[in-house]
Amino acid sequence: MSNAVSMLPLKRVAMSATCLAAILSLPALAIAQTAQPAPRQVQAPAKSRAAQQQPQAAIASPVAAAPASATSKAPGEIIARVGTTEVSADDLRAYIMTLGAREQAALAQDPALLSQAVRLILANRLVLQEVLAKKWDQQPAVAAQLDRVRESAAVELYLQSVSTPPANYPSDDELQKAYDANRSALLVPRQFQLAQIFIASPKDADKSAEDKAKKALDDIQRKLKTPGADFTAIANAEGEAKNGGELGWVVETQIRPEIKAQVMGLAKGAVSEPIRLDDGWHILKLSDTKASYTRTLPEVREQFVQQMRAERAAVLRRTYLAELLKQHPSAINEIALSKVLATPAPATR
Image (cartoon, rainbow, N blue to C red):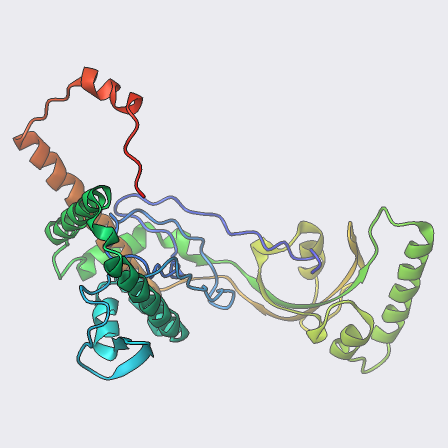
Protein backbone atom coordinates (compact mmCIF):
# COMPACT_ATOMS: atom_id res chain seq x y z
CA MET A 1 0.00 0.00 0.00
CA SER A 2 1.36 3.40 -0.89
CA ASN A 3 2.03 6.03 1.67
CA ALA A 4 0.21 8.86 -0.04
CA VAL A 5 -1.97 9.07 3.02
CA SER A 6 -0.12 8.66 6.28
CA MET A 7 -2.55 6.80 8.52
CA LEU A 8 -1.18 8.17 11.77
CA PRO A 9 -3.36 8.22 14.90
CA LEU A 10 -4.97 11.52 15.73
CA LYS A 11 -3.75 13.62 18.62
CA ARG A 12 -4.70 12.29 22.03
CA VAL A 13 -6.30 14.59 24.56
CA ALA A 14 -5.45 14.22 28.26
CA MET A 15 -8.40 13.77 30.61
CA SER A 16 -8.83 14.55 34.30
CA ALA A 17 -11.22 12.76 36.61
CA THR A 18 -14.03 14.93 35.26
CA CYS A 19 -12.82 15.48 31.71
CA LEU A 20 -13.11 13.24 28.70
CA ALA A 21 -11.48 13.15 25.33
CA ALA A 22 -13.47 12.19 22.27
CA ILE A 23 -14.22 8.51 22.65
CA LEU A 24 -15.37 6.60 19.63
CA SER A 25 -14.27 2.98 19.70
CA LEU A 26 -14.85 0.12 22.08
CA PRO A 27 -11.92 -1.66 23.71
CA ALA A 28 -11.04 -5.22 22.81
CA LEU A 29 -13.26 -7.78 24.51
CA ALA A 30 -11.41 -9.76 27.15
CA ILE A 31 -13.34 -13.01 27.41
CA ALA A 32 -11.04 -14.29 30.12
CA GLN A 33 -11.98 -11.56 32.54
CA THR A 34 -14.03 -12.75 35.51
CA ALA A 35 -13.58 -9.76 37.76
CA GLN A 36 -13.41 -6.31 36.23
CA PRO A 37 -10.15 -4.48 37.05
CA ALA A 38 -10.10 -1.10 38.68
CA PRO A 39 -11.31 1.45 36.11
CA ARG A 40 -8.60 3.53 34.52
CA GLN A 41 -8.70 6.79 32.65
CA VAL A 42 -8.89 6.07 28.97
CA GLN A 43 -7.50 8.34 26.32
CA ALA A 44 -8.80 7.43 22.90
CA PRO A 45 -8.07 9.17 19.61
CA ALA A 46 -10.90 11.27 18.27
CA LYS A 47 -12.07 9.87 14.98
CA SER A 48 -14.56 11.16 12.53
CA ARG A 49 -17.79 9.26 12.23
CA ALA A 50 -16.98 8.38 8.64
CA ALA A 51 -13.41 7.45 9.42
CA GLN A 52 -14.18 5.21 12.37
CA GLN A 53 -12.59 1.83 12.21
CA GLN A 54 -14.56 -1.15 13.38
CA PRO A 55 -12.63 -2.54 16.38
CA GLN A 56 -11.83 -6.22 16.26
CA ALA A 57 -12.57 -7.62 19.65
CA ALA A 58 -9.82 -9.97 20.80
CA ILE A 59 -10.54 -12.95 22.97
CA ALA A 60 -7.62 -13.15 25.32
CA SER A 61 -7.67 -16.62 26.82
CA PRO A 62 -9.95 -19.42 27.99
CA VAL A 63 -12.75 -18.36 30.29
CA ALA A 64 -11.58 -18.43 33.86
CA ALA A 65 -15.01 -18.87 35.46
CA ALA A 66 -15.95 -22.52 35.06
CA PRO A 67 -18.76 -24.23 36.97
CA ALA A 68 -17.99 -26.59 39.82
CA SER A 69 -18.98 -29.55 37.69
CA ALA A 70 -17.49 -29.65 34.23
CA THR A 71 -20.00 -32.22 33.01
CA SER A 72 -23.23 -31.13 34.64
CA LYS A 73 -26.03 -30.09 32.33
CA ALA A 74 -27.27 -26.58 33.02
CA PRO A 75 -30.97 -25.80 32.42
CA GLY A 76 -31.93 -24.12 29.19
CA GLU A 77 -31.42 -24.86 25.53
CA ILE A 78 -28.12 -26.59 24.78
CA ILE A 79 -26.11 -24.55 22.28
CA ALA A 80 -22.84 -26.50 22.27
CA ARG A 81 -21.55 -29.92 23.26
CA VAL A 82 -18.28 -31.82 23.19
CA GLY A 83 -18.39 -35.33 24.64
CA THR A 84 -20.39 -35.09 27.85
CA THR A 85 -19.63 -31.41 28.28
CA GLU A 86 -22.40 -29.00 27.36
CA VAL A 87 -22.94 -25.26 27.29
CA SER A 88 -26.50 -24.01 27.58
CA ALA A 89 -27.99 -20.68 26.63
CA ASP A 90 -28.34 -19.95 30.35
CA ASP A 91 -24.62 -20.65 30.84
CA LEU A 92 -23.77 -18.10 28.19
CA ARG A 93 -26.21 -15.51 29.50
CA ALA A 94 -24.79 -15.89 33.00
CA TYR A 95 -21.28 -15.45 31.66
CA ILE A 96 -22.23 -12.35 29.66
CA MET A 97 -23.69 -10.80 32.81
CA THR A 98 -20.23 -10.97 34.42
CA LEU A 99 -18.80 -8.72 31.69
CA GLY A 100 -18.63 -4.96 31.83
CA ALA A 101 -20.87 -2.70 29.77
CA ARG A 102 -18.25 -2.18 27.08
CA GLU A 103 -17.54 -5.89 26.69
CA GLN A 104 -21.26 -6.61 26.42
CA ALA A 105 -21.58 -3.87 23.81
CA ALA A 106 -18.74 -5.43 21.83
CA LEU A 107 -20.55 -8.80 21.86
CA ALA A 108 -23.75 -7.14 20.71
CA GLN A 109 -21.88 -5.39 17.92
CA ASP A 110 -20.20 -8.58 16.69
CA PRO A 111 -22.31 -11.71 17.38
CA ALA A 112 -19.51 -13.87 15.94
CA LEU A 113 -17.71 -13.31 19.24
CA LEU A 114 -20.37 -15.42 20.96
CA SER A 115 -19.27 -18.46 18.99
CA GLN A 116 -15.66 -17.87 20.02
CA ALA A 117 -16.72 -17.44 23.64
CA VAL A 118 -18.64 -20.73 23.60
CA ARG A 119 -15.62 -22.59 22.20
CA LEU A 120 -13.44 -21.19 24.94
CA ILE A 121 -15.98 -22.15 27.60
CA LEU A 122 -15.99 -25.70 26.23
CA ALA A 123 -12.20 -25.82 26.18
CA ASN A 124 -12.11 -24.50 29.72
CA ARG A 125 -14.46 -27.21 30.92
CA LEU A 126 -12.50 -29.95 29.18
CA VAL A 127 -9.37 -28.76 30.93
CA LEU A 128 -11.28 -28.69 34.23
CA GLN A 129 -12.36 -32.30 33.69
CA GLU A 130 -8.72 -33.30 33.40
CA VAL A 131 -7.78 -31.24 36.46
CA LEU A 132 -10.41 -32.98 38.58
CA ALA A 133 -9.68 -36.44 37.19
CA LYS A 134 -6.00 -36.11 38.09
CA LYS A 135 -6.78 -34.36 41.40
CA TRP A 136 -4.21 -31.82 40.32
CA ASP A 137 -5.97 -29.10 42.27
CA GLN A 138 -5.42 -31.00 45.51
CA GLN A 139 -1.64 -30.62 45.46
CA PRO A 140 -0.67 -28.44 48.44
CA ALA A 141 1.12 -25.78 46.38
CA VAL A 142 -1.69 -25.63 43.82
CA ALA A 143 -4.38 -25.54 46.51
CA ALA A 144 -2.58 -22.63 48.17
CA GLN A 145 -2.48 -20.72 44.88
CA LEU A 146 -6.18 -21.42 44.29
CA ASP A 147 -6.96 -20.06 47.74
CA ARG A 148 -5.08 -16.87 46.91
CA VAL A 149 -6.92 -16.54 43.59
CA ARG A 150 -10.27 -16.96 45.35
CA GLU A 151 -9.25 -14.42 47.97
CA SER A 152 -8.23 -11.89 45.32
CA ALA A 153 -11.46 -12.45 43.38
CA ALA A 154 -13.56 -12.00 46.51
CA VAL A 155 -11.74 -8.77 47.39
CA GLU A 156 -12.11 -7.43 43.85
CA LEU A 157 -15.83 -8.21 43.68
CA TYR A 158 -16.38 -6.60 47.08
CA LEU A 159 -14.45 -3.48 46.08
CA GLN A 160 -16.60 -3.22 42.98
CA SER A 161 -19.72 -3.40 45.13
CA VAL A 162 -18.59 -0.57 47.44
CA SER A 163 -17.28 1.66 44.64
CA THR A 164 -20.22 1.52 42.24
CA PRO A 165 -21.48 5.07 41.57
CA PRO A 166 -25.15 5.86 42.22
CA ALA A 167 -27.49 4.76 39.43
CA ASN A 168 -28.36 8.39 38.64
CA TYR A 169 -24.71 9.41 38.12
CA PRO A 170 -23.88 11.37 36.06
CA SER A 171 -26.82 13.75 36.01
CA ASP A 172 -27.81 15.67 32.91
CA ASP A 173 -26.20 18.78 34.39
CA GLU A 174 -22.93 16.94 35.09
CA LEU A 175 -22.93 15.53 31.57
CA GLN A 176 -23.47 18.97 30.08
CA LYS A 177 -20.62 20.45 32.12
CA ALA A 178 -18.26 17.64 31.05
CA TYR A 179 -19.31 18.12 27.43
CA ASP A 180 -18.77 21.89 27.57
CA ALA A 181 -15.34 21.42 29.18
CA ASN A 182 -14.26 19.08 26.38
CA ARG A 183 -16.00 20.59 23.40
CA SER A 184 -12.71 21.42 21.70
CA ALA A 185 -11.61 17.77 21.94
CA LEU A 186 -14.76 16.72 20.08
CA LEU A 187 -13.94 18.63 16.93
CA VAL A 188 -13.97 16.35 13.90
CA PRO A 189 -11.51 17.74 11.31
CA ARG A 190 -12.38 18.29 7.69
CA GLN A 191 -12.50 15.09 5.64
CA PHE A 192 -11.75 14.30 2.00
CA GLN A 193 -13.05 11.39 -0.04
CA LEU A 194 -10.08 10.43 -2.18
CA ALA A 195 -9.03 7.99 -4.85
CA GLN A 196 -5.55 7.63 -6.30
CA ILE A 197 -3.52 6.13 -9.07
CA PHE A 198 -0.08 5.06 -7.91
CA ILE A 199 2.94 4.27 -10.08
CA ALA A 200 5.76 2.72 -8.08
CA SER A 201 9.11 4.35 -8.70
CA PRO A 202 11.45 4.54 -5.70
CA LYS A 203 13.87 7.45 -5.85
CA ASP A 204 16.80 5.06 -5.59
CA ALA A 205 15.64 3.03 -8.61
CA ASP A 206 17.95 2.77 -11.62
CA LYS A 207 17.42 4.92 -14.71
CA SER A 208 15.71 2.23 -16.77
CA ALA A 209 13.12 1.63 -14.04
CA GLU A 210 12.59 5.37 -13.68
CA ASP A 211 12.15 5.79 -17.43
CA LYS A 212 9.63 2.95 -17.49
CA ALA A 213 7.64 4.52 -14.65
CA LYS A 214 7.73 7.94 -16.35
CA LYS A 215 6.45 6.43 -19.58
CA ALA A 216 3.57 4.76 -17.68
CA LEU A 217 2.83 8.04 -15.93
CA ASP A 218 2.70 9.98 -19.22
CA ASP A 219 0.38 7.36 -20.68
CA ILE A 220 -1.97 7.57 -17.67
CA GLN A 221 -2.00 11.38 -17.80
CA ARG A 222 -2.90 11.27 -21.49
CA LYS A 223 -5.83 8.95 -20.80
CA LEU A 224 -7.03 11.07 -17.86
CA LYS A 225 -7.14 14.17 -20.04
CA THR A 226 -9.31 12.45 -22.63
CA PRO A 227 -12.89 13.82 -22.54
CA GLY A 228 -15.13 11.56 -20.45
CA ALA A 229 -12.17 9.74 -18.90
CA ASP A 230 -13.12 7.25 -16.17
CA PHE A 231 -10.68 7.62 -13.29
CA THR A 232 -11.80 4.37 -11.65
CA ALA A 233 -11.34 2.31 -14.81
CA ILE A 234 -7.94 3.84 -15.49
CA ALA A 235 -6.84 3.24 -11.89
CA ASN A 236 -7.83 -0.43 -12.16
CA ALA A 237 -6.14 -0.90 -15.53
CA GLU A 238 -3.01 1.17 -15.19
CA GLY A 239 -2.14 1.83 -11.55
CA GLU A 240 -1.03 -0.54 -8.82
CA ALA A 241 -4.09 0.11 -6.62
CA LYS A 242 -7.25 -1.90 -7.12
CA ASN A 243 -10.88 -1.03 -6.35
CA GLY A 244 -10.51 2.05 -8.47
CA GLY A 245 -7.81 3.35 -6.17
CA GLU A 246 -10.44 4.30 -3.58
CA LEU A 247 -8.95 5.56 -0.31
CA GLY A 248 -12.33 6.38 1.22
CA TRP A 249 -12.87 9.25 3.62
CA VAL A 250 -9.60 10.55 5.02
CA VAL A 251 -9.30 13.03 7.89
CA GLU A 252 -7.35 16.15 6.99
CA THR A 253 -4.79 15.55 9.75
CA GLN A 254 -3.98 12.11 8.35
CA ILE A 255 -2.90 13.35 4.94
CA ARG A 256 0.77 13.88 4.15
CA PRO A 257 1.66 17.55 3.65
CA GLU A 258 2.75 16.98 0.03
CA ILE A 259 -0.62 15.42 -0.78
CA LYS A 260 -2.65 17.86 1.32
CA ALA A 261 -1.23 20.85 -0.52
CA GLN A 262 -2.56 19.46 -3.80
CA VAL A 263 -5.90 18.21 -2.46
CA MET A 264 -6.76 21.55 -0.82
CA GLY A 265 -6.74 23.23 -4.21
CA LEU A 266 -8.93 20.69 -6.01
CA ALA A 267 -12.56 21.17 -6.92
CA LYS A 268 -15.01 18.34 -6.30
CA GLY A 269 -14.41 15.63 -8.90
CA ALA A 270 -11.08 17.14 -10.03
CA VAL A 271 -7.82 15.23 -10.51
CA SER A 272 -4.43 16.44 -9.28
CA GLU A 273 -1.20 16.69 -11.19
CA PRO A 274 1.26 13.83 -10.50
CA ILE A 275 2.87 14.13 -7.07
CA ARG A 276 6.37 12.71 -6.58
CA LEU A 277 7.03 10.97 -3.27
CA ASP A 278 9.84 8.68 -2.19
CA ASP A 279 7.91 5.58 -3.27
CA GLY A 280 6.70 6.79 -6.64
CA TRP A 281 4.09 8.91 -8.38
CA HIS A 282 0.62 9.65 -7.00
CA ILE A 283 -2.35 11.09 -8.85
CA LEU A 284 -5.29 12.02 -6.58
CA LYS A 285 -8.94 12.51 -7.33
CA LEU A 286 -11.12 14.47 -4.90
CA SER A 287 -14.56 12.87 -4.92
CA ASP A 288 -16.13 14.89 -2.09
CA THR A 289 -15.41 16.98 1.01
CA LYS A 290 -16.95 17.16 4.49
CA ALA A 291 -16.54 20.29 6.56
CA SER A 292 -15.22 20.03 10.11
CA TYR A 293 -17.82 19.92 12.89
CA THR A 294 -18.11 19.38 16.64
CA ARG A 295 -19.81 16.21 17.79
CA THR A 296 -23.00 16.88 19.72
CA LEU A 297 -23.77 15.72 23.25
CA PRO A 298 -26.35 13.13 22.07
CA GLU A 299 -23.67 11.62 19.83
CA VAL A 300 -21.18 11.15 22.69
CA ARG A 301 -23.57 10.80 25.60
CA GLU A 302 -23.14 7.03 26.11
CA GLN A 303 -19.34 7.23 25.92
CA PHE A 304 -19.33 10.12 28.41
CA VAL A 305 -21.60 8.25 30.82
CA GLN A 306 -19.40 5.13 30.73
CA GLN A 307 -16.20 7.10 31.18
CA MET A 308 -17.51 9.32 33.96
CA ARG A 309 -18.90 6.34 35.86
CA ALA A 310 -15.58 4.50 35.49
CA GLU A 311 -13.66 7.50 36.78
CA ARG A 312 -16.07 8.01 39.68
CA ALA A 313 -15.78 4.32 40.59
CA ALA A 314 -11.99 4.65 40.66
CA VAL A 315 -12.25 7.66 42.99
CA LEU A 316 -14.70 5.85 45.29
CA ARG A 317 -12.39 2.82 45.41
CA ARG A 318 -9.32 4.89 46.33
CA THR A 319 -11.31 6.78 48.95
CA TYR A 320 -12.64 3.57 50.49
CA LEU A 321 -9.18 1.97 50.67
CA ALA A 322 -7.60 5.10 52.09
CA GLU A 323 -10.22 5.30 54.84
CA LEU A 324 -9.89 1.58 55.59
CA LEU A 325 -6.12 1.87 56.00
CA LYS A 326 -6.56 4.98 58.11
CA GLN A 327 -8.83 3.07 60.49
CA HIS A 328 -6.43 0.14 60.63
CA PRO A 329 -2.83 1.45 60.69
CA SER A 330 -0.30 -1.07 59.43
CA ALA A 331 3.16 -1.98 60.67
CA ILE A 332 5.74 -3.48 58.29
CA ASN A 333 8.81 -5.40 59.37
CA GLU A 334 11.30 -3.94 56.88
CA ILE A 335 14.08 -6.37 57.91
CA ALA A 336 11.92 -9.42 57.25
CA LEU A 337 10.67 -7.82 54.05
CA SER A 338 14.20 -7.43 52.73
CA LYS A 339 14.78 -11.18 53.11
CA VAL A 340 11.74 -12.27 51.09
CA LEU A 341 13.42 -12.27 47.69
CA ALA A 342 16.47 -14.06 49.06
CA THR A 343 14.35 -17.17 49.71
CA PRO A 344 13.01 -18.81 46.53
CA ALA A 345 9.34 -19.76 46.46
CA PRO A 346 8.45 -23.48 46.21
CA ALA A 347 7.96 -24.73 42.66
CA THR A 348 4.55 -25.92 41.50
CA ARG A 349 4.34 -29.09 39.46
